[in-house]
Image (cartoon, rainbow, N blue to C red; front, side, top):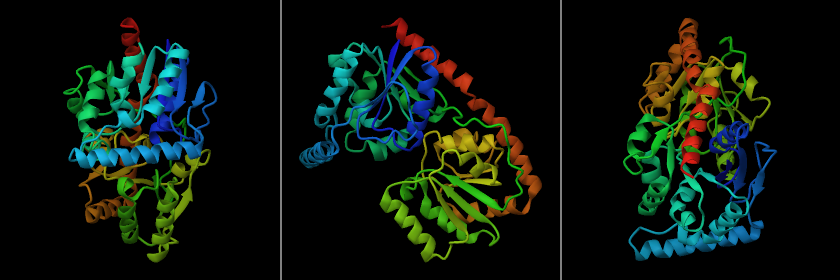
Length: 378
């Protein structure tokens, strides 16, 4: 089968990383291509069948800015609702041409805007479309697709298959498209070592994005942990977000307590191995890859509760779930782990047990079955 995985971009991020890993595994059986709609830096170094379909950057910025103005005008006229597909046709038509010219049979779309556009894409191609829903239902509807929810529903209903990441999201999305299933994101890091849990370090990995990842919460938590412990952060983000983080660390006098290590690739394994606890402060998540990564190194997990962390930790069976936003409780639970090595060891064993459910072979098997179902209906 000729398959293309289409993303907004292939910069640093969980969606981009898992797209690469799943795509390269599927490529052992099928012909898989990767297609970036917008300007990208190919952060994860996809080597084969990678297509940067972006326009020259000045043109892309113009098209996106112009369409944003038109969407805003429509939103005002229609009291909040607007179309995404109508103002993305210059990008969508380029994708349609690619699908036709390369005899693509299955298209996997990885962002809400792209999923919204499925009904338009199907008018001009004969491919089968899989909507890969990387974030939770509530976040999409109340945040990311707010303003074009009706069109998002229309696009999702048009999908031949839909893939959600958690049981909760499956129950929601399947009400829109009864061809929905759920498949976990796999463990994407190859690891044979586990932490000795002896270092006085708490790790965090993710985009530096204050609202989504709760960076403001992380700073509050860090202020309250013992002075001989550190929070080490791996990741990057938009320049203004990174600058905000560095400024906040300085203003709170946390230079010795919060260590920003920037983006890590080969050094990421050491980031986890040198740590004794993993901390997640996100306000929302789809299926957080970083939790599975951290668990594979035997790290105890402390996370604010949202649909993603609740799924990975199985409602707290395999890690410590904290009421979303309750800083005091998070500090209390972290302190218990900090002061009790045996408790850390207990949660290490639970992490290593749970991470088996994110085994690559199991998950690729489900994807191959899904592809076969599409193939039988081509």
